[in-house]
Length: 193
Length: 193
DNA sequence: TTGACAAAAACGAACGTTCGTACTATATTG
DNA sequence: CAATATAGTACGAACGTTCGTTTTTGTCAA
Image 1 (cartoon, each protein chain N blue to C red):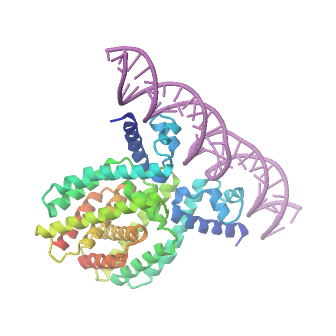
Image 2 (image 1 turned 180 degrees about the horizontal axis):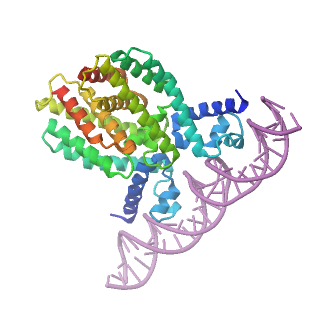
């Protein structure tokens, strides 16, 4: 790999970390350059604009999410087992980040900020919901879910649950959060069985 | 009311509006002053610091939320009727804001930002969860909920549902969101009945 | 393996603007 | 007339971005 690509990865890694703590909008080129000990202008040259940097951080996070959450769970037998594994790796993903999940924070940050960042995020979120839909379909095929299950409703229910978990876990630091999540998930799955 | 108090309300109103679109951290004193057509320094004098401004915006939002969501629903007969009314006014609350719900965005913004703003937000969120808990307790007393219902779990479930609704509604602009919410709410209530 | 050389990458300085905050002075209010 | 409220000006720092220069890298001939 060429030198420039290596540097870019270092930048994106630090950028993701910073975005997870402060939000994408507060990732400043100056502070990011300071963290990885390079010059503002040298860093800037890799992206040509702050907006591009933000989009690339988001895409970098998307690749990581795919690698550590989606791909592994698709290797597991379809159905409830897969869904539970997915939830586990999903939680690990957001726990691994210094701050909160970047997709959660970006979703609130950019719901009213037109531009490339918002468009990128929207694409990612819709893809993710489609992915959840397909996982529910596979659960129908495997016989774990009833045949008449509304897969888009499943996606909504599961995503909602994870958002609740994220709030309780990251902001409120509630000690019973894992238990709450477990109960809610069991109830959710029972409703579709 | 004194002149200063009137001005302060104008500021907080505009500040809440801006915070709902851009997030509390991006409410700048300069841009806010421009919006309400007064000088930066004149506006600043009301708060002595940006942090105080943010805290006051949050408390202003809290008072509004209490007036338009909590108080009205407590006037309704306890139980399922009250809960449904609460959800309705909760949705109206976040629809009325130009951007998203300020509590949702602030929750992700300040989960890793120590300071007065975070402390204020934490207090509000814990109060709100306690409020949901008491509403569930009242539903038990009224006979709508089973006696063994875990009220804190109810709070978690309902808050999760609302967070999902908020994401679908504000970012994804999903046309089926209201239907999804309705289905999830009915299922939630049935589980506690 | 080395030396030369072009391409790529990183740098430092500066641009104009905005940030939050601190002062002092002028208007407005009670 | 005193108290309160608003305006004006200035500050140092940080913002994103541009520029020209220097350093580092990869390639190819010797």
